[in-house]
Image 1: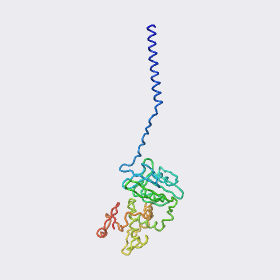
Image 2: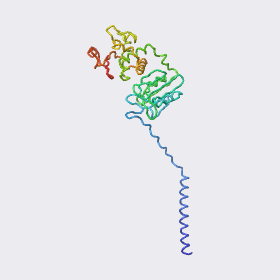
Image 3: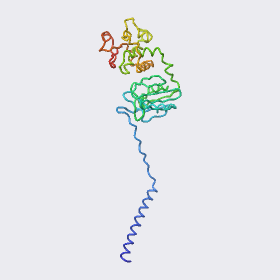
Image 4: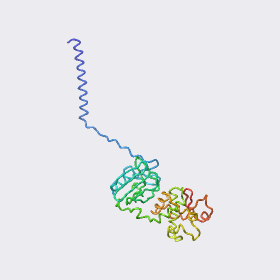
Length: 299
């Protein structure tokens, strides 16, 4: 064999060896059963300062990683929570930032930044603002359960809310619950006394009126309390006529929240603006409760 032929034979032998080795390696990969490792899904984020809670709905765990407590208030996603109880349609208005869920005889809406949800034209106080989180509107669990006719308990040992669903068609409508004369006068005294005050301050003024209604020391109607003159005129708007001004929407909402039974305190029966008050009788003789905006409230 010539030198040239020997070189060609050696080259061919090398190529054949490489091909055989490659095929063998690929065959080994094909014949070996792969070990599959599932990538863990990242946990949904929660707001800064919040901590996660568990939710058990009628005996089953739901809304994993979607329930959290922030500032003492437990939040749940509005639509997914409602959908875990019953059949609802969902819509969202981006211009007003309002989410809405509708089912049979039940219409619930929540607006980002508001301190209440609306259910069948009734107003349920949330205690903390509704929020937009991870593309969903979240609301506090307590008023939402009330709107859905559900009940819940909390087990601190395992950080779990246990929710028992009810008949979501049961909630009465606002027209069946609110008396026109109650809303009329309560909204007017709230507006006249707390125009420009935050929603919480408006609610506190309404609480004072209703606490007096429940007290044996005062008349037993809203109108009677507002226009009580046994010890002199009780509210300045009665004297200056502003009690008859048309209230704004927030004052009407605050009145309805109070009529739903929500109270910041069932003991407050006085309030004043320290910067404008000309009498020191309340501050000198009544226990101080708290201040909201420009008003101080007393027991």
